[in-house]
Image (tube, rainbow, N blue to C red; front, side, top):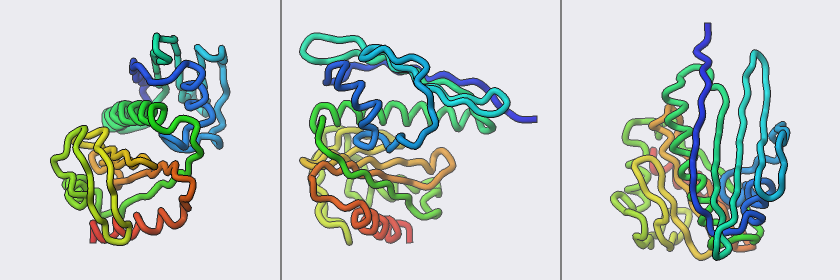
Length: 230
């Protein structure tokens, strides 16, 4: 027996970009605000540019994963997005649903940050996972403290020198108990408290400086995270 159950995550938001720019970001530009999806074996079952996109993956025994974007133009070069993520979770339904729902809010916020500050600029994406020790209940708290952002809320300034990384200078653009976003003049730093959902703490760097090297970034931040959780 399995605990397969359908889920649906719905999120409505306004974004600082036209439907055409949002379409580009959610189809070809995902490394700039989420993670690369170009290797996903999905099929666009609805493709009505630039207003309605449905991408779907199907698997054995009725499994599926589907993303729907409905875009409506607004005044001032903005767009309203109606986003629906649906599918089937196998086992640990409550934990998976909670994690996916909270990630959705953070990812779509990051999409807005990308569109407002970096739209169209080439990006270098880096994903870094913290050691297994970060799965402790206080794992994300320890990272926030190491970033000198323990109680920092949205809009707070960040100006800290990190061992092996250098200066992180910018502004907190997202902050809650599980996620932290820092925007600098040339990058978006995303920190994920996935210890709350049974996984290690993680982070991504979306670098728009034009000079970044993903391997160098991963080594620097990986070393920093090793020291945080030593």
